[in-house]
Image (cartoon, rainbow, N blue to C red; front, side):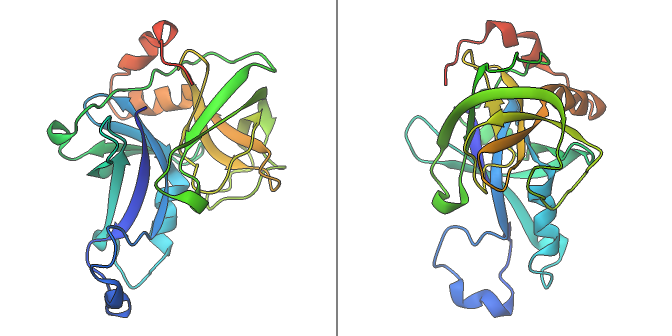
Length: 235
């Protein structure tokens, strides 16, 4: 599945953290989830994941913070690539990323986007990397609860937009899964996970139409939306 762990890390450790030099592959400033929307290296995630990195470790300038996406491969070992932010949607908490050197990325496969609204009680799935178990992809299932619902009942994140309406789904979600896809049985992505309820039992979802709109505004042709009805990937 083309879903990746999004890691924002320092390119060089500040003096206060140099004791950790060489002890691990990553020393994350922030992390979340992202997924491929075009095979040539475009990835979507939640904007607040990127924004968190701008405020954490203020001793590191923005130019010293590197955004990396690690995608699972059939061999089982993650393939990590540096990405850059090429488009944002502040209101809907979305960020469009581009892998800087996509030619070296193996097995990139885009998830198809669908602008359609599911009917209530439709079964949906969400894929992401929970904070409690970073590095392991987790898939949760649940029921679509409805669209155009206000998000006052959802937990606040770093990009709170109370005039925004979200779709809701009844499913267990955790910190770290922000930016992951929410999809139907046929593999079509209906939206992006951006928040949850305090009980972790309700997911707040930005509809995929906003992802399609962001691609258009960023000058990126959305190839996957045209093929969403023909998707064959399961949960």
